[in-house]
Amino acid sequence: MTIHIIKKTLGLVLLSMSTLQLAAQDIIAHQASADKQMKDISTIKTHKILNDANLNNPAINVYTNWDNSSVHSVAGAVPSNFKIDLRGFCMPTPSRVVTSKFGYRWHRQHQGLDIKVYVGDTIRAAFDGKIRVVRYDANGYGNYVVIRHPNGLETLYGHMSKTLVNPDQIVKAGQVIGLGGNTGRSTGSHLHFETRLAGKAIDPALLFDFPNQDIVSDYYIYRGERIQKEARTSTSALASVANDQSNLERALETKRPTTNARRNTASRKVAQNKSKSKSKSYTVKKGDTLYSIAKKNGMSVKDLCKKNGIKQSAKLKAGQTLKCN
Ligand SMILES: [Zn+2]
Image (cartoon, protein in one colour):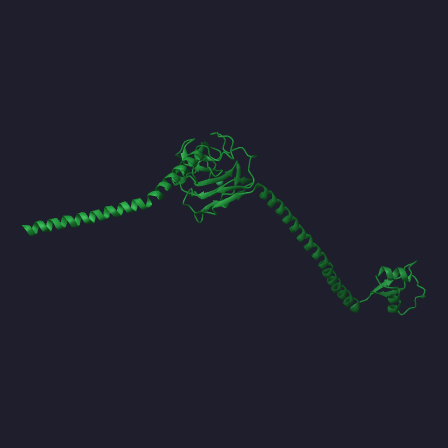
């Protein structure tokens, strides 16, 4: 009985000791991180407030208006040297297959990337943002969504079978906005994905690497100036290509006479061979002179005389035959 009580008491003491120990550890752990936690919470709060403000009025430094009707925001206000933060991204689809690139296609400009998706596939918002347009365009984008993001970009998702968001709705990166489809001007189900800055289409492949399911880099610096400069550079590059071409042409020209000369030498040799085997003869007509005959046959008077064994002072008679080249 006594032993049993002792055992029980000891057990209780041990149990309470270990419980106390654990509780103490918890308290210490909590105390240790209390400051950090407080800081984190306040930071998160500040971030959240800033983020919400950004999301309610995304990229006010780029856009002056907000409307739910126009597909593309008014161009012309495209800022030069604009840094686009891509870090909070989410790939709109896990598909890695790009079926059509950005650029000139079928006699018109293709303003986005086509990514292979199937009808019903999940399409997600590329960044946090606010839904600006949700519409259906039978002759174009089909069911599409335009989202404006705090980083300055607007993203467009076209040809969807279904849209799952409403205008003015705030979405987070990765939130489902619609389902893959084949609506509008589309042959075969795919996602038409556009990235625009103040209405100006930027090749999405410069920002998103679909085959590797990643962003190209943390930031994309849009430089309107640089693009113009690049255009100039490419013009001068074209000019240099043209220069290269003219240099090449010049080189060819300098080479051509050589070729011609070679050909001439060859033909001359043939002519010489011919002349060796068979000399042409010329029948002297009235009024001919040694000079006129030599000229007609492309030889000098001296050669003509030598060939015919006559002197330069020799008188010619009509009907007389002379050996020529
Ligand atoms: Zn497309």
